[in-house]
Image (cartoon, rainbow, N blue to C red; front, side, top):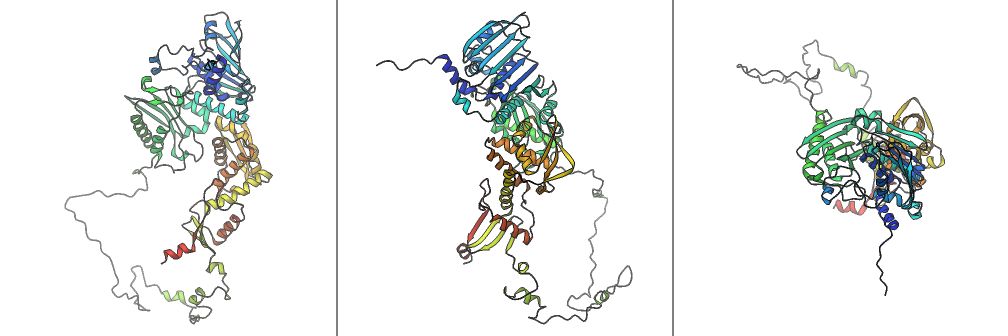
Length: 612
């Protein structure tokens, strides 16, 4: 029987490794830019076409590579970052595994030009599917230029699972954003389809955040800065009033590396807990500088998960630091003793003065059961003759008991009897409980309807129909509101702009990720249109759905949730009747589109049982 275990060819092994490291075009962007940063680049240009499917190019002015290093860089596990196992625990660079470039070359066509400062000529290397096609001397600028074409061209199964261009473009923006936020000392340029989308000159950390998130971000930031024996924590959190219910900008960086850390996120959420509602999310840009020997970054192929040696202590420091900064910048409400209208507090004088008992003036002759009581003398003049107010009413007599004018007869009149007052005012069909629920009697018992969720269900059906039939009614605004979007939000806007226009929104592009809102749907009343649009874009970024119907449903649900009658609103009998009638006209009145319960019925038997 022949042996069945054999070594895989390098090309297949590289494709398997690529499955871990390279998941989409954004993964290529991340790995290439990180290599440029490790090379000491001060200016990095990223060029993409077709959301990275057909063309990705990263150009830097770093130290470049020799012809030998250029060829070795595409061998598996070839790296300049580590020489022994102990180096894994003192890492200060971004890439170190030696898998990025071989993985990229295994699933694409790669062209590299590189030159060191001391060399007159650079080197050109062409690789296709892990196979070296050409290497020769060539004219090149100082630094490195890597071009990746036709990603997954030789792995059609992987290429088939790439998302739409808008989704892949947004993922590239996300990776680009994470890198530029932690490297403000580097100049970045992003060019899409031969059009410059972003240019970020060298700036401070706060200015870099503003460059990415828009001009309005500057007034939202609160600085945090704390240095202890365990490390340094610095960065910015957003003010509580700018917390979002949808997707918020939340970033953790450790030693200039982006990480995900739910445990530290809980520390920030705890500091914000008394200031925002449970459904809102604070934004933050928090940076850790700790000893490289106290963290382990070698636990995930993409290096976005990190283990900390002093995790619990850092949690406490982070929570206290954020809370202290919120208080220092008056984000936490405090008592102001310097107000001009504050009550004057008398000084206490202990020089033999005693407080006197307060006295109350009473009228001993007052008897509430006397129809005519003596007139009390007035200090300001003669007593007022109250009988003048009732002159002319003597002829009106009290109605006899049981007659038409008797209030008790009206209150207890049978429902079928004739009366001038409408029946709904005396026996309302619906009753509002605590400005939150609508109660109504049904044949099987007592029905409870959540007024907000019911209105969400009604508005969702309405908005979805408007989007699909493009029947939204626009209302022009007198003063267009300017909306500044972040780079990632601007990248997601094209995927929803058609549906926003179908609802009745009208936007005009002002350039630089700024948009003017020219018209809004007539149904949103006084709601802030910019906040509505940003929330819907955030919802679209969170769901990441590519099917148009799912996008439309997401937009309709987001707008319905933002414009529906909130809990705490008092409803009239007619408004409750209208909500109930429209709710039961829906094809699914029991649940909201996202699965929340709208209607609950307490059976009559249960009510009878409770009354026994």
